[in-house]
Every structure is written in structure tokens, then in C-alpha cells.
Length: 128
Image (cartoon, rainbow, N blue to C red; front, side, top):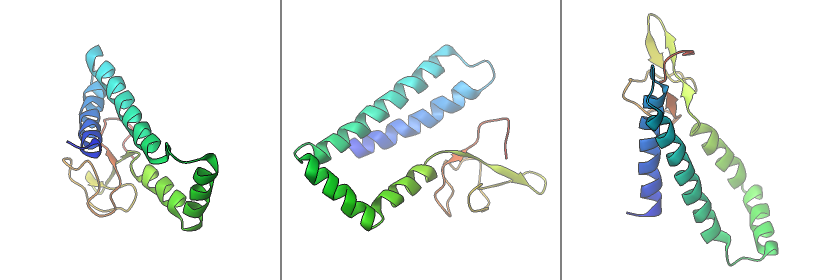
């Protein structure tokens, strides 16, 4: 399993743990599992960045960041981060679930919108 595959699997487990922790009267173990998974994902992602820049000088890192900003990479990364931040689904016309980002119909089994890729938050309460 690659690090990327591991991160994807951990993120899937995190979604499951969050939904269990958000339920009525959740067991403390789900809250601890959620916290541990969040930390593991953060550590792996930081390691990936470190591996990418570990042999670069500060000048090289600065230059690379400048070049990335010129071609929109930093903005694209910010856009992707926003898209991967779960947003509450919206209910319209008698309970039809739609993506809060693009308005496409979504099924309860979707973790992401099939049209725009927005990560969906299906937790109960305060649905948009």
C-alpha cells in the first residue's frame, strides 16, 4: 500500500468514525478513534511535504512557491482543500438531497458529489 492509498483509507475510516461519534449518545471510543485518525492523517501528509522539500534550500523552496503561485498551483491547492472540507447537504422539494456546492442531486451513500467532487457532510441536525 502506498502512502497515498493509506491516507485515502484512513480518511474513509475517519468519515465512518465521525458519523459514529456524531450519533446519539456516542461511545467515547468513536471520539478517540476520530481524534487518532485525524492525527495520523496529518502526520502522513506532513511527511509527504517533508519528503518533497527536505533536500531543498530555503531559496529553492521560496522560488518553487513563487513559481507555483504564478501558475495558480497554490490557489488550486486552496480550492482542493475547500472542496475536501465536508459541507452539509441541502434538502429541497420534500426532502431531495442536493450538493451544497453545485446543487446536483446526491444519494445518502455518496461521500462526495458525483458532479463537482465536493465532500458531503451527512451528519444529522442543521442540514442546510
